Length: 287
Image (cartoon, rainbow, N blue to C red; front, side, top):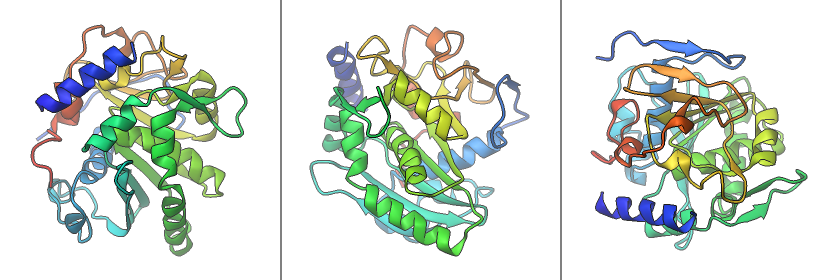
């Protein structure tokens, strides 16, 4: 925990029984959303932190922690060579194909976080993305796309739900677009604690392509505020789902991705909130 704290603070310096749930909805033309739906995607995101031997038979803590969350049949595990550290899985459950990316869990991951300079996003005029996030995702792009296509060939009617927490959420954002660009339709984006991935031109393009997109922010979580919007024009993708003061009530924030009345209204940030989405402590247990 102390290591995570130091690295996150360094990044800021470098880059300048749950009861009934209430939701204030102002911008919903997407797939349905509820606390239970968010929890299912969070469990799939957290599961990516577990070692391969626990994912292969879906026996990790996050895989089994919530009985109402459907089990995933994992068809592909992916992990890059040392130096990049991208890791996750592709699989399916009765109602969807799942792609999940692990958040920061190694030195290689933190180094990717720190590569904040931008690179051109191919094929979209004016769009630029975080160099570290982009190169980290592209290292597994071919494996992920082929794995998803293989599952889709067997289950053509299932939507593809791409998820991740923290760094994994950044990879998920790039993956959702990549799948669409490779001819995979009905792709959804569900992320937690996502940092900004690119500039406003990139965000606008993402929003125009990915019709179901929910980017959940827990209270005053630090990570969604980096890289700062003042740096190189970084800008969030839509649609923000903000839990302003507890783990139960959320607001669906309108707009293209940056809403001054939602998490952008916080000016004092917390690392602890980054690890406590929906009240589930990501760091304990790990699997």
